[in-house]
Image 1 (cartoon, rainbow, N blue to C red):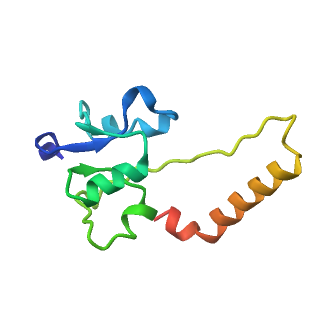
Image 2 (image 1 turned 120 degrees about the vertical axis):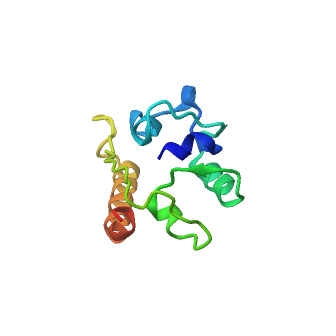
Image 3 (image 1 turned 135 degrees about the vertical axis):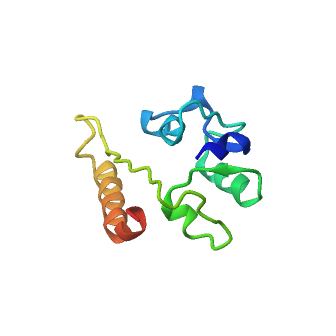
Length: 115
């Protein structure tokens, strides 16, 4: 853990973090600051995969790339996200279809999401 301060860290742009659950670096170690930043988890993944530095990836992204190596195997960050709709649009067919599709994908890929 203490060696992390000596590596180039990849993470989110603090001013563009859209959910407090994405402010996880202090949970890894207090005072960590990402030097390479993007608001896109896909961009962060590509930076990590291109040997740009060390970062935190969701298991369904990181585990799917055999070239990536877990550097802290005993450390996990667990998050829960909610799907929220406005009460006035909750029963619109397009909103309901989108909600049902997301729920089905979460059920179908549950094992990949909770590793």
